Image (tube, one colour):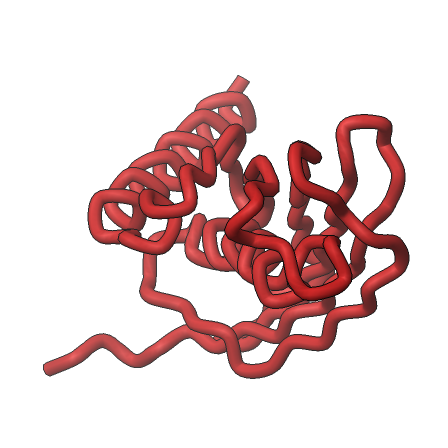
Length: 145
């Protein structure tokens, strides 16, 4: 039973952290990215590809796909409360997304120790096809004094 209480507290902390981030997250608001789920070390973000997000090949610009994956990564690694930022990211684009596609990025923590974490993010279309995979390395900042 005590484990249930700790789990509930951790989920509440993750939700409070997401709400604080979302309040000032202008990029997420401008692109109408929704944060569908957040919990300790995990988050899910969703975005519809608009015409303004396509490149000269008629497919979603990789920067927007990266932004969606980075958003899920950010909400996942900040789910513990302290301010945490990306230290490095690598993305692999596996298939194109097109105008009208709804993309979902799901981030999951792989390891977290001291001030460093590693997270994997899968970006999928509505059919479940993997569009991109991102590995993010996070760094928790020292509190300002």
